[in-house]
Length: 274
Image (cartoon, rainbow, N blue to C red; front, side, top):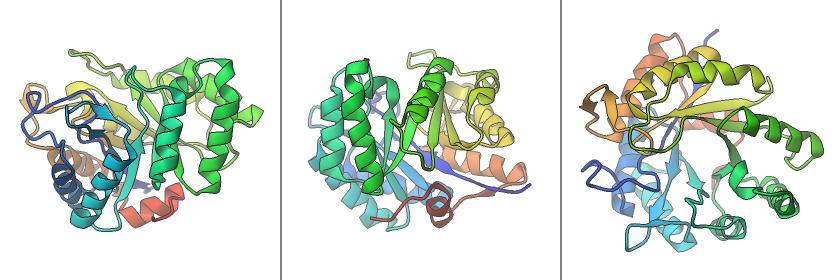
């Protein structure tokens, strides 16, 4: 059955720099231009990372607000903007939470293993998660493996995660220079998901495209971009993030599905415009 498939573009991440790819967007102006071209190519959501003056990963709300304003100026009001809370071994859970509360985005990605590192973090995290739902800020829960999935299920059962629409991101692999994800990893994870969850996938290296094709075939959604992959095919660098979005959109259409525009994605994932 034909269904709309979300494409999220993750254009820079926390680690890569211009020496990794000259078209990697870092400044607010570059992020705005990438957002506009990616929206035109089929992306409905932007996964946003910002950098400080030293080009280091930052969760500074002022930097987020400046980047969001520039994305809105260049890409318009429709594109969904999702900020990250990624710790990168630098930020503590209380700092991640404070960044979201001060930025007040429309959407946010949250790694459960970062925010609830030990049981002592559960109470503060649960209060934060309730606050997100009260404020209509759409969370995407990042899960890395079967253990993460089972732990997340237990949090749902115990009420730490509000019993509403759940959207998870399955990360196929880990960050390191030679990482290549394998679509077979996804097939092993899918049986462990709650059938009521919505889910997206991100993958590393030139296998990103094949992993996205597998995700679409299995009922999921796609996140692509320079954060995890610079190649459009083995041995060939993509010209831009937009090219990776275009290739993904073509694969979705070839599979018999449709590419979700931002309005459709907002309805599907219950994301309120801000």
